[in-house]
Length: 257
Image (cartoon, rainbow, N blue to C red; front, side, top):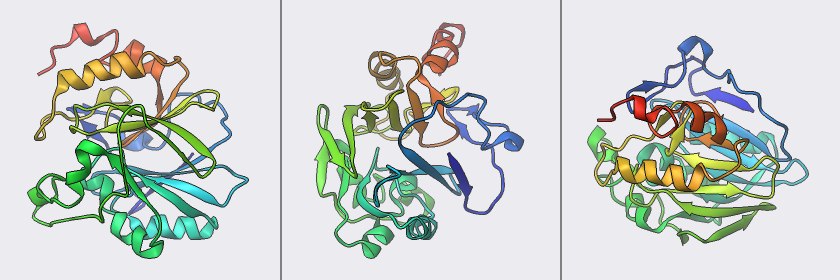
């Protein structure tokens, strides 16, 4: 996996009050990653250090771009260098740090479709709903071309994905499960992080709903399933089941406020 930051510096990622990575160790996973037939490039966008994923098969020239963040030119440059054309922009949810690059990528590739969970679609046009209004700079996106909900499937760039509804961080949050890989891969957005979960203190957030969804849907997957989160390093289902203080076996040892 390739980790890029917008300014070349290391950062600590904090979500739900948990530091996910020591700044000195950022970009160095402590987990061994099995080989997969997909290539996944991660572009990290300040100021929220959001992970944009470029997902492609090495024998093809098309790809998926998941959650284009605040570094659209860096995403475009990376695609051009690799001679890749986006077949779809897949959004896990509608918060600003995950949609800020949509407009720039659509200008570069006018026909690329935008896909998002149906209940988060209003975020694309509403700065209050996508939280950009809270920062004083309104960000909007072109509208979605396809609205998703479980059990929809997405088939693009030679990659088949199942759509799973996992609300709680946002009302329409979805994750994308790549089943035809060994191990399985989850493109997870802001649901499950290494040692943490997505924030639930935003409007329409629901922590119990998020934890229940993780336990019933993600923790039912094989332990070696790889999670590519929206912030921080990759992890696995088994690692989080054993160690995550918010939703794993250790959760009863902590009080979640």
